[in-house]
Amino acid sequence: MVEVKRKERENVGSLLRRFSKRVQQSKLLIHAREVRFRQPKKSRPERRKNALKRNEIREEKEVLRKLGKLE
Image 1 (cartoon, rainbow, N blue to C red):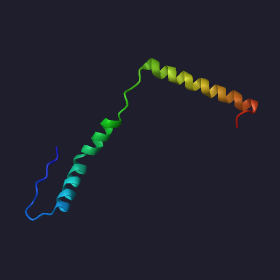
Image 2 (image 1 turned 135 degrees about the horizontal axis):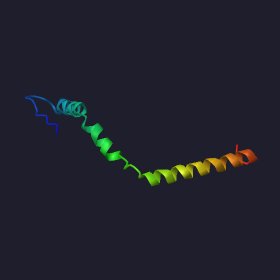
Image 3 (image 1 turned 135 degrees about the vertical axis):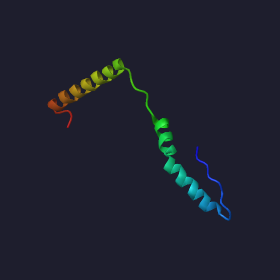
Image 4 (image 1 turned 30 degrees about the vertical axis):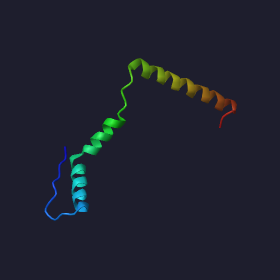
């Protein structure tokens, strides 16, 4: 947790600037983004199923390309 105490005769702008600098140095924002956008790993059967589907689509496109129906 980042904590910044106001110095004597310090204005709000400089206090805010010091706080944001401390937050960036602590790498809290980077960690928060990683946690927020983390994707759960797919199981092996699910990855295999997706790979087979990609191969089917690739083969279908290749057939259409050879027939001249797809650029």
